[in-house]
Length: 241
Image 1 (cartoon, helix red, strand yellow):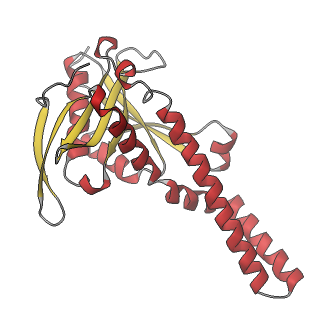
Image 2 (tube, one colour; image 1 turned 180 degrees about the horizontal axis):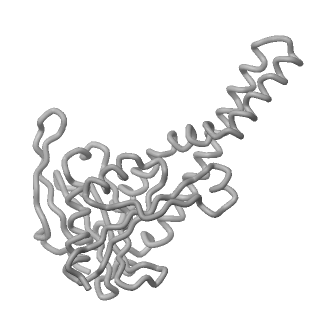
Image 3 (cartoon, one colour; image 1 turned 30 degrees about the vertical axis):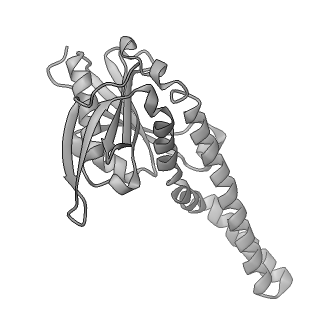
């Protein structure tokens, strides 16, 4: 697909320091491929520290760390060894969780982001957009028909905005572009999934009118162990059959 002119939507947002940044939303083209993948991977990587804290706050993790510390303290009769051992355990846990998160990101990059043009082909009822500011791609979002076969539903996916461009209304503009697309094509609803770590994203969707549809723990051994909770949001489009 060739590069299309940026005519979908334009806007400007002000940052915390009052700086105005002009941006525009346009359909994805093949020239954006590497940048889109980089924006998504960088944005998701930011959640790695929060994931570590989330797991370490689980009761079983706190119990294991506490028992380990007490056992070492009782056997060594010195505070230094337990402290060093606990520090090493925490570092190892952070490394392993970071590797697990990187594997998840790689899996996403190998899924619909492996061939974006095909996965979000408009002929299949899908679309992918990028936000441009300062002559580069700073945000992404896509929509696809639901994989579960739910009639009249679009799934919003891969919403991401570069850290330096957040708070300017770009994510809101991307989401509204996706909602307008769904409305114009007669879809009944737009749905999306968020992780328990994505507090800012969840707040944005709720401000836009999405409502919590259901919550569930990821049905895998790791998901249950880490209490990895998925919240599904739904936006019902008025006036559609």
